[in-house]
Image 1: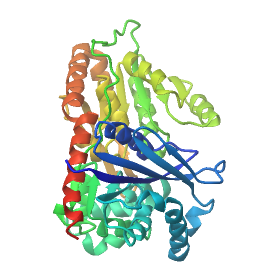
Image 2: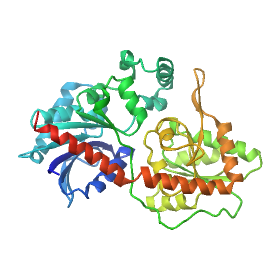
Image 3: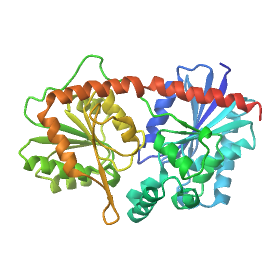
Image 4: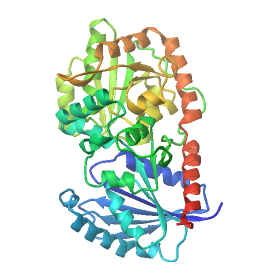
Length: 421
């Protein structure tokens, strides 16, 4: 394959580790196997401890970290100042583009489309937008009324939403990141449908590549033996409202009232006061709130737990779901978005329905969730079969090798077009 230059571009925040951050490190690891791809990483960082840009070189890539303006969210809607900032980024990073051919700009934050287009005025290149989430769905955490309005539109309008697409846009860059990119990679088919049916993007411009991860699980069987009579459940993730932890706690109470013993480990970023509040308000439940822990420690919980539970109300290609599959952890999940695409009900997971009404909005059916938990308490053989099947799902559809082959194929096809522009 002909060599080419790949420029990965993203933003991150010091106080938050996102799915995009996880994807970037996973992608960089996967690219190590492709010697013909010269990789450059332009990383914009919101971090009060970083005052100046700096450059790092490794065996596999070159990285430039550039601080974001402290008031970035205030200037993002002002094209004049964004353009001035982009000019400075190019001034800092322009040496990475000198005398380079076959260049691909792969942006992982929609706000970076202006920067990519500015660079494109200086070099011959192609732009790939990577859609890691469906932006409007995060309004569940910020503006519930707005979310309910848009969710209702989706339910009632079906495929005829392009005339109302402005209602779904979250900022000035979003639509441009779809229309001006040469290719859009999204991680689920429901995201592809959103791009086609709501944003009006043509089908042949969209590629669906779900996330994948390296195999960290021992090849030997490590099915948990639940000897103490307590079903050990595991929740992993942030505690934003859309992740549905409150519904899991409500379902646990239903299960306990029916006489069953269960516990829940909550692993993920949580403020100490928030952790204290959760335990104080749920003293009737057996909870272990770990906060954010290293993956090595988290992997112990993946191995020792009986059931992984995901109660999200919006999710794309969830790393938590993939990790649970990799460790062969039986999963109870809501049947939404990418989770519904990853898992097959009663084969490699048990699915719980969500409920929607204009009065309450989108919620989880906690009675059904409780029933699924009880079903797994009473059926150890079903747990064991789900474990085997979900591990098989990981091996066939959720590996890093599969993700990399599909991604590099997109790179290969788009480089063929560069010299014909």
